[in-house]
Length: 124
Image 1 (cartoon, rainbow, N blue to C red):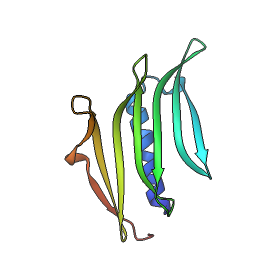
Image 2: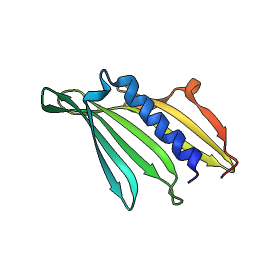
Image 3: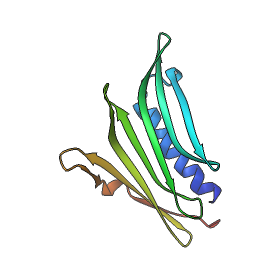
């Protein structure tokens, strides 16, 4: 996986956490790795010495170890609820990033077309 594609994926996740976080200094991260790939991350909020669930991220990769999906879930006080999903498609030297928001009425992710972008990466 190219450095630019990895950097882009990491920046998307960091921006998502930063937008949702009221106070970044109170967040604790617990990462899960399988065979050297980050497949999950749980974010806890620290408040007066107590940790509470906040966000959870799940990652999927293709056979070439390129990220193909990043899913974010929010803690609602009782359980994890789906929030958003970013899917990555690789074609030649381009990566298309497609953003989906969870629609609880439909029980599925719905496309947010204005958030879809394609980036050309000459290093691929």
